[in-house]
Length: 248
Image 1 (cartoon, rainbow, N blue to C red):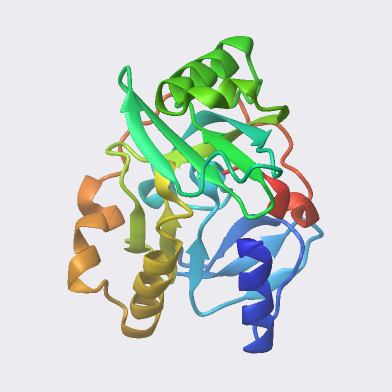
Image 2: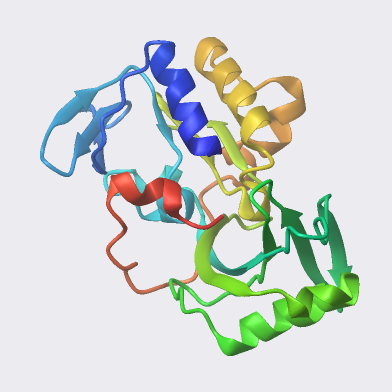
């Protein structure tokens, strides 16, 4: 719902969305400036500035010079969805966040009666398999916080990939390639940091610089792009129309 609301707000403000995959970055002849993107259907879209916000795929975007390619790796996260009974009031009416056995756990109740439990953090490359062990660990740790949770119907299990940087902090703002900015590497906090990321990127796009409070997150803090583990090519991503249904 958040993604749909943001899209609606942008469209009302005059933003035009091209619902097709960006296949590669377009760079000027001298190789000194980003000039737009080429979409999967071969359409060239010119732009004065390009923001690379490709999540875990950011480090694999074609056409980006190696010197400014974001050092982002995929970090697997498994999530559970359960249904809370409505007859006697919700089992939980506020978000719970905790560390159990060294694992970060959250329980998020929804107005619909759904309860989201997450999330594992697994360094397994592009694997998005939901595993019995992952489900067990989430339920075990959630049970420590809210014992009644193990009596709820389990309605869905999902796994997604987060973008992790070398220090697991975001990569925000201009790169060494003129016209190319980054907004990726948010690790476990992508949704939480959405509003402040929007503010930071708006400032960077209009002034050419990061605001003072965001300067620790400049992509240039790593100097030359650090090496990331060699991974096989990622699987074919979902169609753009399906993106709002992907797990967080």
